[in-house]
Length: 70
Image (cartoon, rainbow, N blue to C red; front, top):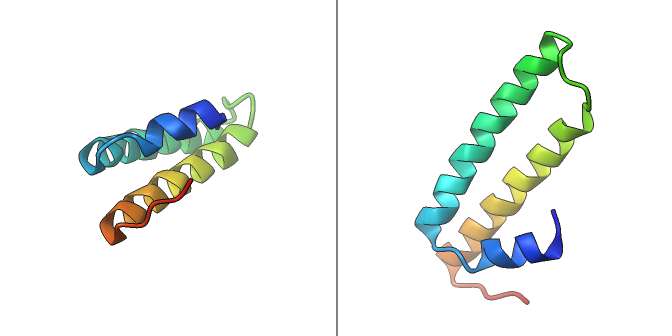
């Protein structure tokens, strides 16, 4: 994830982050299915998607706790 994409995520509300999380989980499901059927050309997409999910979850938790990071 690029720095500009991360900055854009930080500016979103919790509801928007929850929406983004749902989209990423759906994408991960599709990638896993493609990987299982040997249709996934780049398996590193799985790792990237998982990391993006973790980033969004971290941002959601920070907003819940009221933590502001640069």
